[in-house]
Length: 237
Image (tube, rainbow, N blue to C red):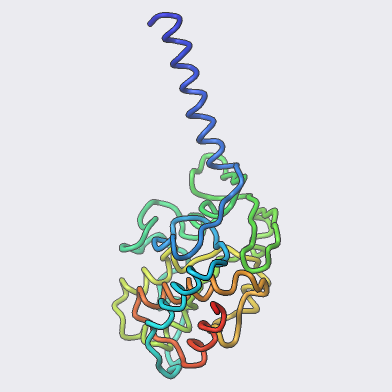
């Protein structure tokens, strides 16, 4: 290899390394729900334009309406072990990392991993879509960031999940489309509520939130209550 070729090779390597580092530590660009049907893009960007709001309302209108069913028999384990990597039909499935870590790595910036691991996230910076708060998170304060099921597992249970095969429940619980790392206290305030009883405190994100809720519900055939559908449509006027 000539000196000129060697210099060109090294320059190319530097560019590649720079791109990799920027991908891990550069500013996160949150994705809008209408352009993120796989759920593999980071965060949740507001829906602002009239055209996108119209598309969101059309999506929400497709939701079936039913009464909320009983809570009989619900346990978290009905959807598999917490964050276990044993789903089969969703992105990140069976990649060797726990689902929670996959989501922290997707949405966090300045992500660092436990020494010797390419999975276990131990620190990161997160812009919480629900509040707008920037959280400098460390695993020693694990509950400061929780991974929210946009359509709660208990809501899904009361809307038909007892009749699903276990593989579908595993996918529902581990699908990145249904998962957002958020401020822990805000997630606990939401609990298992539908949109008529709980919406993100940050008003500008509410249309995007209910659109994501609708995307998940449609993907898994989950109906919503009449009050929830009405509340969802109201957020995207």
